[in-house]
Image (cartoon, rainbow, N blue to C red; front, side):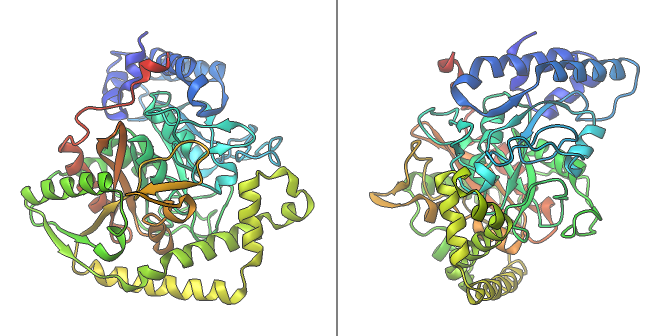
Length: 472
């Protein structure tokens, strides 16, 4: 047993498991050893179930040994965000109010992963009720960034990103309502894919905002994200927002050829007021893509100027509707930051909400027109480097700005429109990873994944990973 196994991706591990070069038990023990070593400092887990994980790994080993190999995910250890339901198991949603809740059914994504032979070993820390972007949880403790324990991992899926980055889970899932997959993916230097709204079922996931919520993969490689999308995608009649569109063999179609690709750049919004270090890393990636034959085209999407208003009104109003009864009856059980946001949502008017939806409609039309001219849009994922734990502001080129205002500025439009969006690491500055965001047309995740695959092949990270040994 060696902890180095846990550093590998699904794409690297699956053939070894299939060919019996390694066993699922050996791999699971490797991942659990990393949890023992690192999670005391990182705090990515709300709950760890070693006994159940080893039992599951032994069952996977027996199946593979007997010739019943289920596919790439068979025997792969994964921990999931504690907002997804497992039958007869607790799901806290990172809250005090739901700390005793036991689900009586599996989330659709959990069912699909179980059928694929995944070994589950725990539930991951998150921002309370997914309503925030720091994963500084008042009930389960702050999750820390594996690259720098004094910084946030992003949120709300901070535990998922930190666990994957620290090799405490081979892959994971996150939920994304304003950027909660892509923000922590950028902050922790991993891949985070928010697919098209309706592509992956949300049945069995506690909601934050009905019309903005998504579920998606958080992985070490683009191949792994593509593979998980294949497994998780598809129509689900149990989810009223699910869309009946066929999925594809995304992992088998990955192609790093970008010759003739047209990349849209919206300078007036997505490149405005960006930390110089972030801008430098993203511009470097764009230049490399140009050298490979891609073409850059400047585009304009006027309604982006109102996107922050529309995102804030929609998410706060819908979240407050979901939590209204508990806010009235037991407000003291919410963390201070979440309670404040829920109270803010109670103040929004019907006029505000309708205006926000009108902006969304304009955005959808303008993005659709833009994707008639370009294949994808590229931008930074975040306009800043992850701030220190407890900070409510960020520094962007000497300006002190509100973290809450800035954190979803580039990710929120993907939720308002429901368009597929992916964050991929594109460099390291001052010891912290930087994420590049790729957006594509609705239900054309293959375009987003292929561009991400090309960027991955550029090796802009130069093999840099969190220095986990300093946490020993």
